[in-house]
Image (cartoon, rainbow, N blue to C red; front, side, top):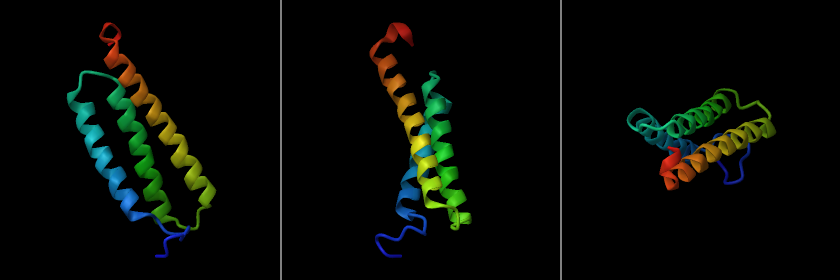
Length: 92
């Protein structure tokens, strides 16, 4: 796979995303907060986007990146809410 190959899945990025999913699922199970559940849900959608593109590489690249970025923004929002609420324990 060439460095700028736009038709194949980026396996190192997939491995990082799966690792992050495992960690967020761990947080979601053992934390007594709601934001890890939302962050894990968005991360699951990110991994599902990877898997979908791996199974169907003929899908349009813009659709893959659009979905990936959409889920990433949702996950960042969940993490931001979690960070904000952690700094404000009266809201947790």
